Length: 246
Image 1 (tube, one colour):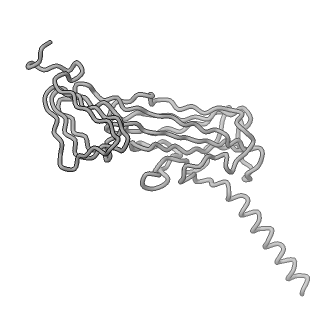
Image 2 (cartoon, rainbow, N blue to C red; image 1 turned 90 degrees about the vertical axis):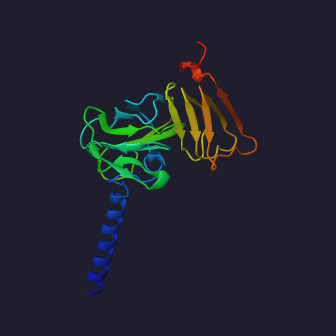
Image 3 (cartoon, one colour; image 1 turned 60 degrees about the vertical axis):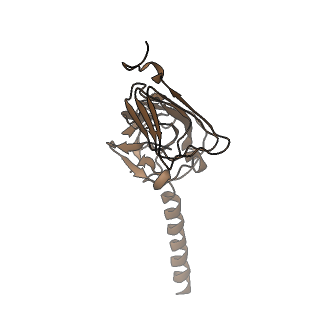
């Protein structure tokens, strides 16, 4: 009787150990922005690519993106891939197969809803990303190619990690530009008629308002000490009106 109790206890410990080991792979993705290599090792034998989003983007514009892993080590089934994509500004939509949102607030990003099979060394995910109205978006994306045995071991390649900046390029011929970023980040804000600022400028920022006619500053607008702020009226950076000399 005592031997049977000990045997059952050891069997339970073994099952608990197997469950903990196999589920630590996080098969349903990541909700934070730490690299996959924090859990998955074996260096970075392959590469990761992001296509569809240029380094300079137009404001409030939707881009169709594709993020891919190319891993020569874990090249075929049962190998699986996972990823994490996060941008400091912008929104997500039209999520492709196997993609979900993860995280909340400023930590909201994209990740896999389940591991995706790797075929021929390649696995990809698709989604749409809409740029912010102005400023820069700091982007980070990570990926992991695993051999599919359910364990975090030396056969999993989690070393892929990339950091980028998507710069929003304003349309220089916007007639009436309303700036609502809070705070207003670095940038040269241009319009062919007027600019209205409804929020304060970021600390230590360098901000220029360049417009053909008027600049309107709402009561909430303010410029912190140490911030460079300048208004240029009468040019609009080439967006000329009928009242201006050519």
